[in-house]
Length: 289
Image 1 (cartoon, rainbow, N blue to C red):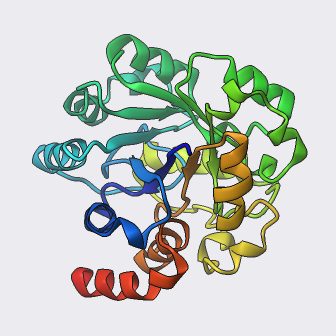
Image 2 (cartoon, rainbow, N blue to C red):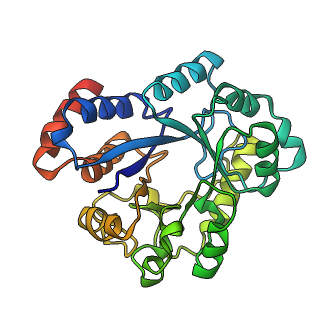
């Protein structure tokens, strides 16, 4: 049976929650589904203008970055920078803070999500030891275009969730299935017509250090159990049965920028066996609060 790799949000905001989950996974493996692991944690440190997907403003210190990188890497968990801002221009490549983040994590253990070709080329040249991953923010909804993306030099390609639970997806060859990363619980509505415009707006906010006039999406306020109605939602029965048996082993959980309770519910649903969810929830809430 192949190990299922999970990619969790967010290494800065959910730092303690993820470490507690990892501790429990190692100490009480019987509470969890078989053969799973936390492969990486994605996000950015506040103040990263290269960031995309969610608006993350603020600041943090060099010491905080070093501490987080070391804390996850020593557990065998990669940090994955969400450097997917689609509006990057040449002058942004030399941003001091983003390059500092890359330098601190430049140890051959970490990853970076990309969208902009300009930024991708810069990272490949300056930081060749990072695993480069193609981001879902590219909004590739066509199966033929996805196949072309999978043939490129990426460690993984994060799928647009519109292709979840489709016959076309399961017809991909095994070498592609192993390279595909699926968003199991995407909060965005299926085939959202404003998705690319949303990512552009996020990019502008990051570059301007301002959320003024940002078009907040109503989907972000939806409850975890409500998104189960999405056609793209991958339930645990399908994930651990049809998907794993077909060769899909990489799953991203959406939730960056969301309330901790919403993130916790998704972690419980996908990682913890139903019989132990209440017990694990109580333990984590006690430890967190």
